[in-house]
Length: 414
Image 1 (cartoon, rainbow, N blue to C red):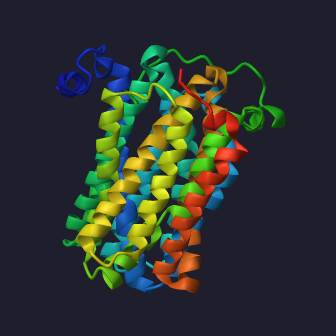
Image 2 (image 1 turned 135 degrees about the vertical axis):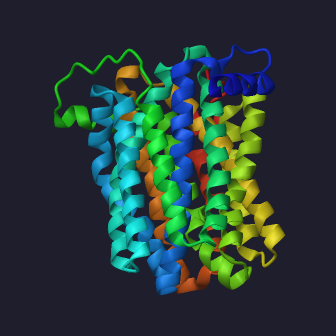
């Protein structure tokens, strides 16, 4: 049934293309990622709201991100090496199982009323370790499930699924939180197990890397990216843009103290960027980027910064939602462009390790960005933190135009 529905969606999005979503391994992995990300988004919303309820501290909200980032930073490069040697689908399934175990423990602790700040931070470490192995495996798996000619559309369609989950996860999590945090965590547990089941049905011809595991082979992805200005520029651009411009960690403060809404409003705020990203990704699938990819990437990052600035200054719930939706639309252009460049410019035997490097950049921008937002909010207040980040993002886009001319001048993605 889901194969027929996915094929129908493919025809609606791109009528003249091959039925991309009708490829069974790709569709099953698409469903696995959809349910896994849906679970993760609900989980992170509930954790953030519960932490802020417990401590009312912007610093502690930032620590949740930091405690996910540090283990991910340590483990990601070895995880990328494993993604080139072991079956990538099974690695992803193990990561979803770890997420399910975290959700199960939070169900038990919430029902028994012994959820503490220390427990949430400890489980954030576990989620960070799982993410370290998940990201290289999932990024390196998609290119071996579809023909190379369809890769840009495959990445765009994958992004559509992720944005659907990022839209639905926080909104659904906010609604379920009204029935208690344990209701959210129980739903996350079920969705994570569904993701594991879908992933175990994904089969492909796995050819492990032949080189022995050495320190040089583990760091080969770093060397590969460092030698290619386009990849280094694209990854570092995303790193600094989201590190400075991301306001996700502060959304509980905005929801409760500035916009005066509850967990349902927080769910809508967290979903708003994904709504914008989903709409933009649908356009990118229908009308893939053909020319001037580098300049469009840099322009999108500048728009991301301006929209972040508007969100930071807004005290209107509607304006804040619209500004966050624009950040998501701009970010989707960056994500699709960066991932397409990375997969096309990297041989398959290196994709796991290069994806690991990309995961470090993503993890630093997201989790470390949450810590940066919490820390600067503790010093400057939430509005000052977000405004400073928005201005910094615009300056980064302007600087990368000169620092990475090969990226700026990249015309076509192929």
